[in-house]
Length: 267
Length: 230
Image 1 (cartoon, chains in turn green, blue):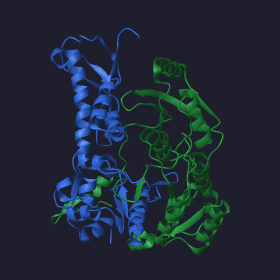
Image 2: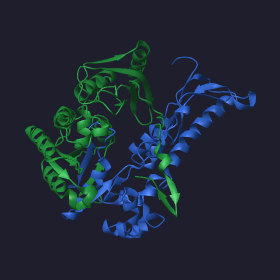
Image 3: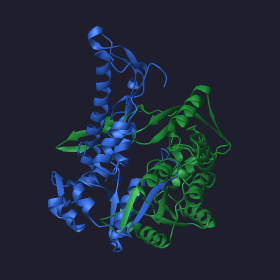
């Protein structure tokens, strides 16, 4: 922020996880405040959220797209209405996206009063994202007042409840007695003012990776609570998520090689 | 062309030239080879604040196997801001190796919106992940060593919170038993590995405001509990 007029950064996974932590932990602690937010989506990913099959994801499927846009809409609402950051939706354009699909998506996003741009930087480099750059510069002109999902002085349980209801669309947070006792112990030992860092599946707003789209009324179960006294937050592990992932059946390592002095197979 | 072919065909500028574009003199750069460098902290601390500097956060819909392209968009946007004449730069996270060998295959953008040299960035980069893993694992080794040599602090081996970490997606290490093999190898106990990015050291590294703050936060880490409840 000392070296340039515009600094672009990214937060991992979806806006319910990476961006939430960026706002509620990183920004709260560092004083950084984003002036604008870019929400990235692809038409094929939205079709997948709408129940589309991966094998046919490149074929036109307006019904799946329309059903899957709810995921985008929920993220838009979270960024705009909860984090309170002006945003633009950027569609990472693929040649398989059809005109009808683009038109449908555009209409849906514009109906929310949010700007949407098509970006072709993958094929065209910086020139392909000029519309996005102009949209971002315009957003940055507006004064903003970023808001956190929960205040510092909420209790640890109130914090996870606020994240679950406001960001995940959940109707309740559950935990067995051992976990509840641990949260009470941390609250009473003087760690109650720490932010909560949620570890959960990145594939869904819920803790069930198979629930695509924008599920509501689900329940968030806190499986484990970890104190990070040096980093100054409380990790709440929700649902089945692993802090040590495994490799898939065909790991990409099988395609990575070294041929004629060059590394191949990374992408 | 594939992402890596595009990356390898790129005509890279020496990192000193990139630094000069941002007004950073070569003397404040610590080069790692020709195309990577770290900027001196002292130099950054001494720079005046820019009041009008804008931070832009790139985020995405819930990830799917179909792919979204967050880093690609971040890189594309950074380039596009410069195309329209703005003074822009990127602040990206170093990819962890585990997912590179698993699902991702790389995490430095794609197509003509990539950070180069992408092989270096994806594979080891400047070695910081390893340094963080070792700092984490040193603490774990010190803890088991303390218990082995008499456990003066009375640590409850059933209630050790500090795990070892490795930059590899390896499910075999999730739940393990350590210190097997007899008296000389310490007290057997249940343990497990996390990935490096899940280490509290990594979080502290990202949140610390200075080296002093880093040191102070390291000292506050809770690694284990003693036998009597507090």
